[in-house]
Length: 634
Image (cartoon, rainbow, N blue to C red; front, side, top):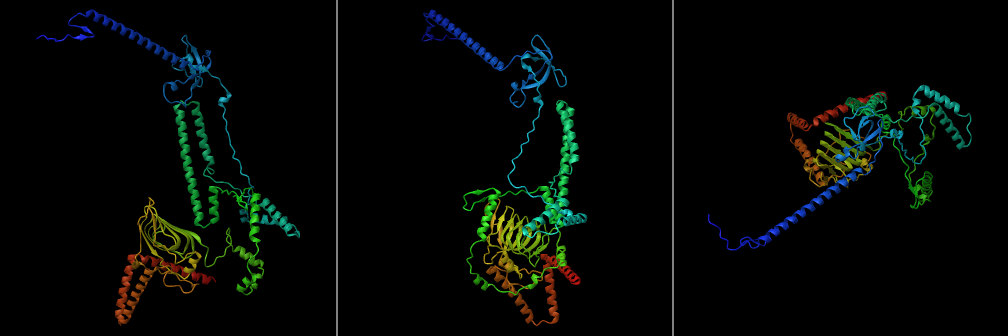
């Protein structure tokens, strides 16, 4: 190895190692640094010890904060601090103290042996003295308070109680009522009408109270009829619950309680479902028998009577709000006095001159006999109000639901019409005053004039309508809708449209508005081609029209559709003229007629019209028998 040549002396910490002239100064500097380093280590140890002492003091201060030392002795009842809340997160809802326990022994290290007061079980480990406190038994600790907050009753008059008039259907009760009423009536009534009426009213009310009594209103619910069977199960569950609360650590008692609870829940659900099913069948049976009174009584008994509050009114000048019954009655009285006592502004002589004069019907002044009155009363239907039944009835609501492969004709004014979940059906309705709604229908033909038309989630539906509003298509599943103008006419159609306040010159049948699932316009429907338009003939015998001979075309039919109908009629007329001008022999006419009949029967089978003809034939036979039966009875 070759020695390394150092050109310049190395200096380390200001000491020349090569020359060796400053070696003493280097040793002094090294001793000084060791001394400084030792001092730094000593100061660091002092600060660490001081910090640890401070932390220990803070911990002890926090631990002893709020703690009290009690004088405990053997035999005392104590509570133990729940240390789980200090050793883990959470546990805010758990009690801070557990127990009570009984002190068995205290050793020299202030360690206490405990046993539970409830069952006398000894704890496996001793407890520190500062984790205990005396247990003070108080009767308020076991007290239970039940508060019942009553709602403030609204001011108002008490509703009048109704008499139980259903008892009059019994012969004995009706005879007793008549006898009591005859006894209550005075022999002679007073001359003034007011006094006469007061005496009559008092006699009738007294008799009703003594013989009929008031109607008992009782709201029905599913647990009313099953009260006794449920009570036994609930008592068993309550007994099991009390046993489990007395010994919450017992697994057997907990399992018994859970079993009883499951039985009560299962039996409750079964009884509830059975009660509602039976009640629904009962109400449906009343509806099928057209027992309107029983239907509403059963529904009202289930859902309870509806309460109607008194609506406030404003004063005549509109500044004050009248809330009390006296003020409201006075306001109504003031209103009708102003309404009925106004000065007439019409010339009576001029009005009487315009009104037509009719012959005096003297037979209306004849007083009906007692036999006629009894006959009229007995002819009334029970629990039904008398009403005039003519050729036309008042507009009503109609709902057609779940019909299939049917043909429905209702040629009367209708208030509202709903067609729900029908398929392969043709429905012909009279004019609808309000809304015609179709929902979840498919493969249908609906013919109706209505004020508004709503189609929801329908497929393959053809609608012939006349409406002053745009047809509304709702739902994302609506598709295959075909709109066409009205294609029927019957003698009273014009009169029915006037009754429904529909005008033929305002028709927006071909301007649909489709609102999809996202509320946007889309083209899920189409307008029928005029070449595919056909008129529908009502297959019923109509009475004489009240407004003259009806036109051949339906009201409000557009020009292009009327032209298509006219061209179809010209084709039929030209075919008839050609057959008439061909001078066919009887054999040729028979062959032609046979070919036409075969083609027509094929068309009937392909289009499904044969089923409709069979239904009309059966209906015609039924109407014929009914007509013969009525004639025979007369």
